[in-house]
Image (cartoon, rainbow, N blue to C red; front, side, top):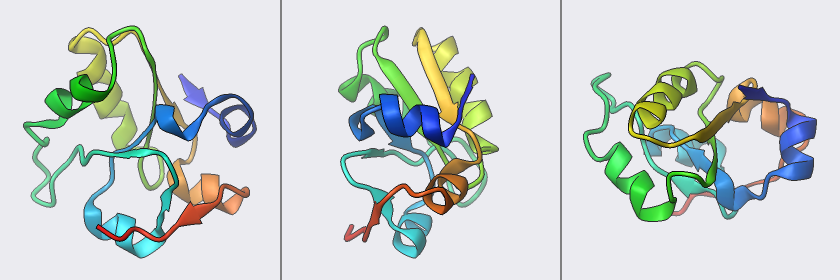
Length: 112
């Protein structure tokens, strides 16, 4: 399920959002304050082998999770991976952080 900016901005706390981009992308554009930063696809294109493990440390399987990447493409695959791992309430932000920030979401500098 894709979530528009208006829906996400009004109803989803940043603490439910996982930004799955690469650290270099976090440095480049900034991040949503309070969101979780867990890279899904490594620079090599391989899935981060610790992705599901890291998500399990933060969320229970029935918690609301909203994924976000740069434009919304990587989140589709990450949603499938999480659903296959037993997470039941996984969605993504339509158009990724690019669209989300263009429509008014406030980003903060990523400091590593």
